[in-house]
Length: 312
Image: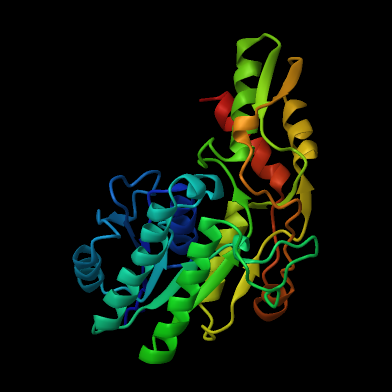
């Protein structure tokens, strides 16, 4: 008898993380279906693609019914803290109403899928200490607030309808394909362009006086798969490297990849209304309970991104 192949439906699959998550599931024997508002992005050819607008409840419901997934993962989000300050209404619509549309589609579906919602370290109170899952939730920006609200609805649908809804709180992650509006791809792109020019150059940066926990995206998507493969949907897991990297150090690493003299110019327009000085992940729970540990470092991701921009 042929072994049943579990099917994963990924909303927001056309974005940065979608291609990595798709490959992670494909490599572990799943059938993968991707959905996004417009484009399939960099999805592997084996991934079936169906466009859908997450804010259109009927489209979401009909897609869930048509696919009949065992697992639904929602990557669709306004995922930038900086962007969320400029469009708070859209941030809530996409990150909360979009999630509700998935929950409602799952609630009505004959076959109830397991669901994974992606939260954020931005849900937590501002603290210099390493953040574990018991750290107080007190988001200080529209993006973080939207993710706390999403988790509250996940708990509600878990309790009232018996849905298996998993929640994960990843810290910053990066890799080839992330938009250069994010800090590390921005460093890599600017330095690669100076290197290609063969001339000395200047790069524009924002606030460098902060420390962030950065992971390679490949480590993050492996954690997502491991979380939905275990039974306890009530356990919330932090995922991060466990190291708070100083942005100045990371910038120095990238600039040294170039052979050109590079000067740094601070651009006040790149500063956020509120920037936490230090964010660091305590990933003890997922390490102890699921055996997940990072296999890559942020320096691997920086080198890969720099090379990709250099060869673009």
